[in-house]
Amino acid sequence: MPFTKAVYRTQDWYRRLTVPQFTVVTGLLVIFAGTLILSSPFCSTSTVGLWEALFTATSAVTVTGLTIIDIGQDLTIFGQVVLALMLLIGGLGLMAITTFLQGFVVRGTELRCRLDRGKTLDEFGVGGVGKTFRGIALTATVLILTGASVLYFFGFNDISSTGERLWASIFHSISAYNNAGFGLWSDSLQGYRTNSVVNVVIIMLVILGGLGWRVTSDIWTNRYRLQRRNLSLHTRLVLRTSFLLIVFGTIGLIVTESVANGNFFSGLGWNERLISALFESISARTAGFTNMPLSVQSVSDSGLLLLMTLMFIGASPGGTGGGIKTTTLAALMAATRSTLRGEDDVVMRNRQISDKVILKAVGITVGSLLFVLTMALLISMTSNLSGEETFSFLEMLFTCISAFATVGFDLGVTQQLGHFGQLVLVVGMFVGRLGILLLLSAIWEALNRGKLNKQNRVGYPREDLYV
Image 1: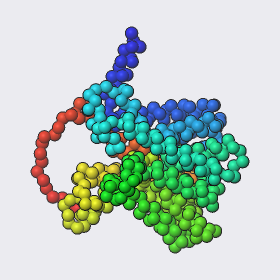
Image 2: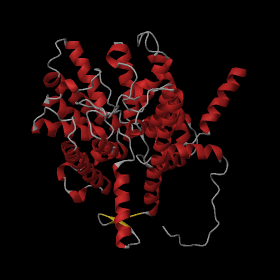
Image 3: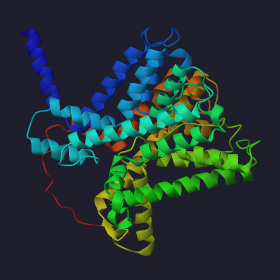
């Protein structure tokens, strides 16, 4: 039967996919399905076409938060529920769900499948993904429901309607834990700038979601003997780096805006300035929420540069955020320290780090930087040629980093870009969420099919290079 043969050919095609390729294909399929659903009359108004739905679906699956529509006005309640589900799919880990589903599709040697997963996805090892995925889902459910409960009873008290308050609490709790930055109001959380409960809940959810399941699991496992020596090196580095970045971002934002006489904190007391700076510093590392107006008029150039640095670094491996990750920064800083000291090995916390990890950190950073610059170059070229509204390069670079690092901060550029510029952001969000190395690995494996299992036994002579 022709239909049966077509099914067999499709199954055979899926079985030949490697994990990176399977992840890319699954992500594209989820975005495609989300686009069709969001563009239907059940989910949105007539102002949302296929293009608006595609941009929104990509931003949701990649948990970015950039949008060219008004979520609260242009999407129906059903559409907002669909959007929340897409945030969960992307935030809980597109790669985790992909690997879990791949067990039902790909057939082969079980040990090889697990080794392949462990090699490609740092979050999973030889032990399989079932238990890990259940742990991720359970942790997310508990934290999201806890955050929603606090927001409902103590945060969004100004919302009189019980149903609206309940949905606002659930939606923003999901969005915050998944570091998505989507809100039901066009001004994000600016209306709750002085509400300490809302600010604290959002901050805690963003931090816990950005730390990654490996860190939260390690802390929970050692909760009765929570000492530094009992925690893994990964957990200690993530906690230390995250804390330093939060302090650096908070103090840096206060200093830059005070010295540059920016308008970001105008009219606020020192306590409110501290809370706003803390909120924006944490949100800049891939959350995307803002409780203050964000524009080139309200934030100084030095403040924008600081926010771009935080956005580019991002959250931690296995978390719901993007960026090059905190451990990548820690590895690069350790390698720089070893170079300055003239040491041959990279040592962190009395542990030697392999050269493979350092090379991966360098590859992620360089690849990400080149990709972001390419995005900015394409947008700047096309905006000048097409006669669109002219933006400064700082604005375009800020938006490109926000898209690639899946942050969602916007200076008012996204909606005013043409379709090509928005397409560049769509590609940037997708690549940034999957990871530049995973995407390049998928492309490399597709171009070199049949050569992957061949080991290169050729050795080459060494020679020094002056740098």
